[in-house]
Image (cartoon, rainbow, N blue to C red):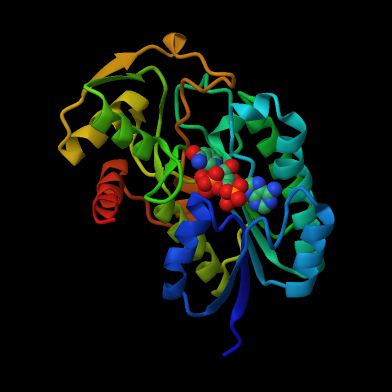
Length: 291
Ligand SMILES: NC(=O)c1ccc[n+]([C@@H]2O[C@H](COP(=O)([O-])OP(=O)(O)OC[C@H]3O[C@@H](n4cnc5c(N)ncnc54)[C@H](OP(=O)(O)O)[C@@H]3O)[C@@H](O)[C@H]2O)c1
């Protein structure tokens, strides 16, 4: 059987790593995992050369400039990695007839909503990182018709840097911590998103060729404070967690008050399964405890 070739970027990051962990369960695909050394996103010639040399059937783009606060000042770098390189990837994928799956963010919205954001709702990026990711979305869709964009939010897992690991460290170091309670959204366990992406590839092979923009997160709606309390309780820690207004925790990049996304389209089109945030948090904490 001819195996379909899949390039996955950002293997050192949370999502790329999670796809690598799951990849052995998808023997129909031949995966090629890459990071900066093999393909530097800040260098368009490196992107073009790598894709033309390896000629993938699918390209899963997990790498990005993800330093949200730094992006406010490192604008050129954020733009080059999150927008310019995505245009080049999409162009090169179109040349070799590869389907592109690329990841975007809830920060393309302004966070003033009061009901879950639908995929076609008005874009108004809340910060510069969100703006660069929005330009990346447009560049992908304009340059390769066979593109799936997945916006996600609050990504965490046992690998890499994230809120869950920071909370566990702080809760072990301190008797009391304060966490913002006026920003609500939904966490995304990276292995759940990885599984959704691999489901899309599997469905594509069966002839399900939907394209366009999708939303994916775990299900449920919580604040960062709720998330922290659950991390503490499920880990059996005793740290006192206090609610804090965002106004008392200023950051260089603005954060949305409301960033819940409507995930129904990915379920309808690609039969992706959604897991409740608490269930997935439990899985992650168990994995972390076994390390
Ligand atoms: N994390 C979140 O909460 C969140 C929320 C919404 C959307 N997203 C999106 O979800 C996707 C996956 O995020 P993640 O959490 O897995 O990110 P991550 O853990 O920060 O990993 C990012 C990856 O991109 C790589 N990278 C950065 N600059 C690069 C360059 N110039 N060339 C090649 N590779 C480069 C990094 O490599 P190095 O480590 O070597 O720099 C790293 O492997 C991204 O598109 C992100 O924008 C994330």
